[in-house]
Length: 377
Ligand SMILES: Cc1ncc(COP(=O)(O)O)c(C=O)c1O
Image 1 (tube, rainbow, N blue to C red):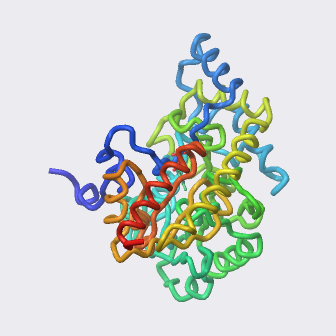
Image 2: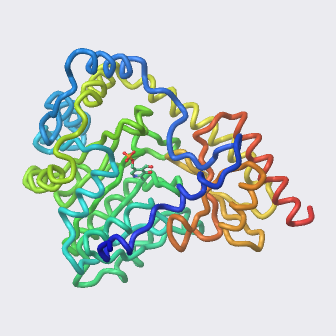
Image 3: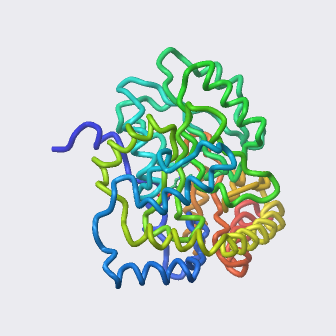
């Protein structure tokens, strides 16, 4: 009954985990901040809804929000204006819009392995072929430029980058960003840079692709920065001519992004980034806690996450990641098996530290007991 393209995609493995969890489980499978949005943002949303802000808006988003976003990127490229900005109904929609606007049937698209769950299905839905490039623990989850050169063919159209990374927590330093730009320009590829965790970085400074090349589309989101994952609001940034093309697809997917949420985010920008900085400070303290607790669990090795709110430990207990995640689930701990993010995620678990320190201690305690039991330790 359904089209081939529908048969070829599945709902992500992350969702399946939640559905099987016993009540009162500790959830370290979360992909969202456990914080409330800033007060000003909530107040502005309520005000907008109560005062008539409930109508369709412009396809590319309301002008004040496009201007705020453009201003945020002006230090990377002073030419940035609202003509570069399209407000989308989430980063997910931005990724889908980019895929449909940029990939032709039969094109190859380089995507990270492990990488966020939407890149590969979106390529397929657009008729393109996802070609995974590896991010391994041995390389501290940094890309291997020689491998990228080997993977490029005449049909390669684009490369998807995600730094800070979900699920690895890796952040690409500026020199890596520059090398990827040179690589993309040499092969005439478009870079789709998913920067939804750009504000959530620890020691390593975040390096954006914006302002480095015209062969780029930035995908970003308000979900994580303002802790509004349920509102579904994000944005795309692209050179003006490309933004016009992206906006056509965006129109046909969404007509326009939600109006009151946009008004609220403008208020959030006006209020400054103190709430985001507080949230990131807390994530850093939790990252440090997780880095103290994880390495002492039998069979576990872990690279220190430099951004986002995930640790991606290798767990060597003689079982698959799914088997281990199921064992933990039975004991009341939700994690995500690494292979939900690609073949090279096998042997890893994604542990989100978007949960309280108390729950992190309790959850990793369950993990320790499980690992000690199966190793007889
Ligand atoms: C790397 C990455 N990109 C994009 C998204 C999509 O975010 P949203 O659709 O909430 O804006 C997520 C959400 O988890 C993510 O982790």
